[in-house]
Every structure is written in C-alpha cells, then in structure tokens.
Amino acid sequence: MVASSLAALGGLSAYELLRDGHEKARIKPNPGDVSDKVVRIYDPRAANWDYSTVKYLDFVDQHVVDEMMDRGVCELMSVGDPKSGWKQIMSTYERGDKIAVKPNFNNVNHGYKELITSPQVVSAVIRGLVLHVGVPESDIFVYDLCKVIPDELVKGRISYRVNYVGRRVLRSVRDRVLLRLRRGLEAPDKSATIRMTERIVDRKGEDVSCYVPKVLTQAHHLINIALLTNHIYILASGPLKNHFGTVRFSNLESYPVCLHGPALKGAVLDINRDPHICQKTRLIVVDALFGTYGRGEFSGIRKWKTFPCKNGAPNTLFLSRDPFAMESVVCEHVRRERQSRGLRILPSVTT
Image (cartoon, rainbow, N blue to C red):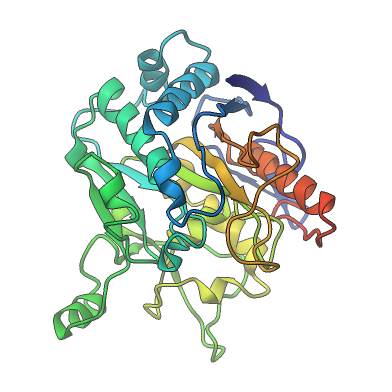
C-alpha cells in the first residue's frame, strides 16, 4: 500500500496556457488553490483479476477502493482524516447544492471487453460526498452523455441511489420529440455556449455550435473521474479529453465526432476553460486500477509492465485538483508503456 505525491511530469504549467503567443487563458479549477500536486495511491489488493475471466469488474474490491480514496484525499489535502479532506475539497458546498460527477463510460457498449471508469471508483467518490460532506444521494448526478449508462455494468455496482444522466435512447416518437425540444438534463443549455477558437464543422462541412449540458449548468460542483488510457488521435485521453463526453452540439449529435478532426487539440483546451468546467471542478480522480495503453493497436484489456504492479494490474488511483498536472502524469505513464512496447508515440493535447 503506497501513497505518494507526484510532481507534474511535463506539459503546461498548472494554470496558464499561452494561446497564439499573446492571449493568456487561465484554467483555474479551484480559486485560491495554486497546488499542482498529484497523489498516487497503490494497493495490490484492489483488483485481483486473471485477465481472462470475462467480468473483470467482479474482481475489484469495493472496500479496498474506498480505503484508497480515503488515503488519497488525506494525502492530497495534507490532513489526518478523510472527513477533513473532503470538507476542504468541498469547502464551498452548501446544503442543496447539486454535484455533477463525470466518469468515462465511452466503452460501455463493449460490455466487459473494453475498459470504462470502474463503478467502484465512482462509488468511492459518492461515498466520500455522502459520508464525509453530508451530500444527499439525490443531489448527485453521474453523467456521460455519449452513451446509455447500463444497469448491469454500472448502476448495479453502485449502491447509492444517485441520478444517472446519459444519452437519450431514441426508441419512441416521444424521445425524439424531447430531443428536438432540448428537454432533459442531457440537453444543451442554449445560454451556455462554449467559445471555440477554431471552427467546428460536421461531416458535411456545416458549422456546429457547442454547448454545456443542463446537467452541468444546473450543478454547483463537478468531480472528474477519468481513465488511464491512450487515444487513437492523441497520446492520452485523460481528465482534459474526458469532457468530450460533456459537450452538446447544435446538430443534436450525441457523440463528439465533429471534435475529432483538425480542431481536436484546441477544442480540448477550449472546453476545459469554460467556466462551468474550470470554475466548478473540485476534484480530479484518474482510475488506474487497470488502465489501457493500446487503443488502436489491439482490443481488450492488457497487462502493464512499467507500473510497480502485481499481476500486470496497476491497482492505482491518482488524485489532484489541477487538470494539467494530472494530464501530464497520465500522458507520461502512457508514453512510458507504449515506448516500452515499441508503439507509436502521439503528441499530447498540451504539446
């Protein structure tokens, strides 16, 4: 069991990004907090999977993950007990505030064949909010708007009665009408346009406007639970790109296809400097219980060799309050593993 602080391993500074050589865009998730601290929590008991049994999530120990989250919060906030740590993280919380939680459920349609943010990690975050901060479960909204959030894979593994907001299933005329009327928390908030530096277009070359969804504009706080994973177009899909699953579009597409073109890197940074994201983010967690480094080269979940891990599973959680510092750590681990295996090293969004 290891708890250790990590400095940012490269990339941009914690809060400053120079755009076009003169415009300074500040991405500061926690006003008054200037720490770029990243904490690594390792426990070999967290996931004891043989990498062959189908339901890998059956082999994640929720009790151990809860302990890891408690230790991570204490280490991150330099306190002796998790209640004090969570109170500091959520220092601006007031009774009645809504909490948005953004995991990476992009691969839920593949079942257990590909990796998603482990529901046990999501559950550990919810536990911290409920147990240590006193947030009612009904005020917590777990969302990923690219996919339908399934019961067996996700909801059935989280014991808290929270709200889930995913992609609307267009199986009826009613669903299609509601989508067109932009009803529901998954819908775009037309008053919250994301300012993009570059032009965003669809497959036909027509302009697409990007919006913050209602689930986030109506929330007061945001927790980002990303994955340790590479990406097929950039080096890693860490906490910054995790918000591709937040954006809503004027053409009513659910999946961010229009962001995966030449504007990708700029779009990632533009999205993360939107005030509903940068000013509401209270905590960033990266689920590295398993992690993946070979998207695009092979399918399935593979063992790592560059982590100090048991049986190939990193069994690690990373915690931070700085998205750039966390992104740097994710990119460095992906880079090291891919380099060790002779895989192509793509640029990151911060280079």
